[in-house]
Image 1 (cartoon, rainbow, N blue to C red):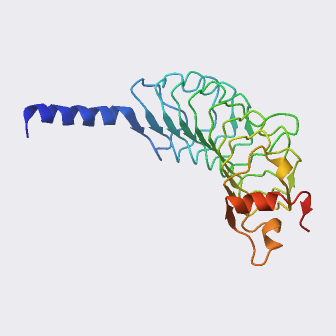
Image 2 (image 1 turned 90 degrees about the vertical axis):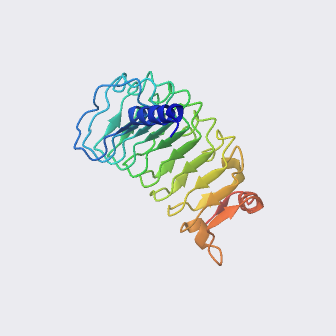
Length: 242
């Protein structure tokens, strides 16, 4: 191998090792001290319980954080403050029952957040989250029974919303109106029985209604519908499935 090429490859390997911190399944109970070279931090399948203020202050160049399947119960308002490059967070499979609505307000590049398989529900008087950059929000497998007018009022850039496998049965009149860029919405395996166009600020391109009361009133039952079919369904104002 050419000597110059050898050093290029060696540098690339060293950079990759330094930039990816792989600590999955190590019985870790607290995040180790930060390293400015780390871009991708994997702490999945550990025993971290708490995310207090400025918990990740040492990881200022972090872009991807994986913390699925820990024991986290709550997310503090400034736990991730200072992580201006953070693009993706996975907190799936924890025991999260409370996320401060300001928790990701300062992560101006965050586009994807996975909170699936936790124990979350919505407060009728507060927005769930405040983020101008978030595009994908995964809330599958929580304990969400109600979606209120204010729930998504501070997520203007959201494009993909997964709420399948919740106990959801009440969707308020303006639930999805703040989501003017919504393209994909999954309500599969929920108790949703009523939908109409007034609930939406933008008609999503794909709407998954698999195994819902809405779907079961059709023969054959609806599953994942697309494009014009979504618009036709939502045009039936005040349609109620019993």
